[in-house]
Length: 344
Ligand code: NAD
Ligand code: DAU
Image 1: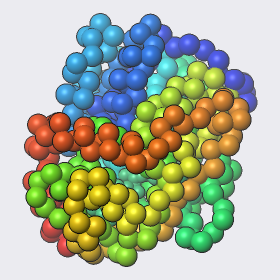
Image 2 (image 1 turned 180 degrees about the vertical axis):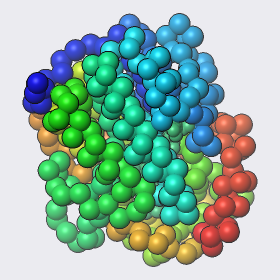
Image 3 (image 1 turned 90 degrees about the horizontal axis):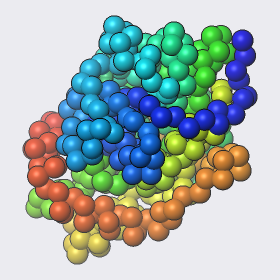
């Protein structure tokens, strides 16, 4: 039976959010809890170093239930999936630098975990949305006018992005072969509250708050396409409820900036001299530039970013880290120790 191309057009009332204690997953859970109080959310999260139950602890127990478990655990999936009408799949090992040091957990969670979830979605005929990344398309030259489009060929560079590309291909195959009702979104770099201090923006903000110097890889010219995580949440909901089955949607907010520019913006906002940072060893295989063409999402689903002023969004993010030291402090020392051991 072919389900491809049909609009999902349904309002889920009982969803599983995998990875709902991580950065983007918890922002999505918080957004759904606020905007769709009729929707019950089961968060399935293994609580790795990147998962923090405090991210959703203030939400009502009646609306949001946390199941601590592994997406690779088929027996657990057989127990919890049948009573739900959709799975929104955020859980992943998500950090490129970690994937270069040790790819194994990336293969397990990103590839095997996605496979197990797809099998459960197939078995219990549950709608599936797969959250992926623009990195599956590889990188662009700095001066290339082109941006990524949904049908571009996959050319991932890092162990992380190759496992995300693998998981996307599994989703496409499960739609075509088994008729699983799935969609895929590939988003650009997110920023906002609750992001782990290993990532670029929170690392530099918390370095400054902690009296350490920010660290810039290579020559600082690499470009990322920044989007506020709340705009990502809205896009995922729109695709889940109105997207066409089997389709890939790219999510981006026209936010291309080079890393040196972003770092200088943080330094200025935190009243530091613009040269108060260290150049450090580059990331092996470092992707030069990502850039998303979001026109399909805008045209088909009428989605547009709300957080279009990056400087304003960044200032709010800085304030959030300033006010939530108890949240980031426990992970800071170990994260910096790991980076220092790699000359970063
Ligand atoms: P994160 O590392 O902050 O959070 C990942 C979450 O998944 C954590 O809560 C962790 O405990 C959980 N998890 C990991 N392995 C698990 C397993 N085996 N079973 C159950 N839970 C597990 O990641 P993030 O930055 O919030 O990214 C979320 C998703 O969005 C990922 O799929 C990532 O590829 C994708 N994405 C991220 C960005 C970005 O800028 N961060 C951009 C585009 C797409
Ligand atoms: O594009 C989407 C991807 O964005 C997601 O799929 C990933 O999960 C997410 O981690 C992010 O990947 P990046 O590798 O782009 O993000 P990161 O925050 O690690 O780095 C952003 C840029 O900043 C990158 O060019 C490397 C650079 N960097 C990073 C760190 C941690 C530095 O210059 N200094 C640093 O200390």
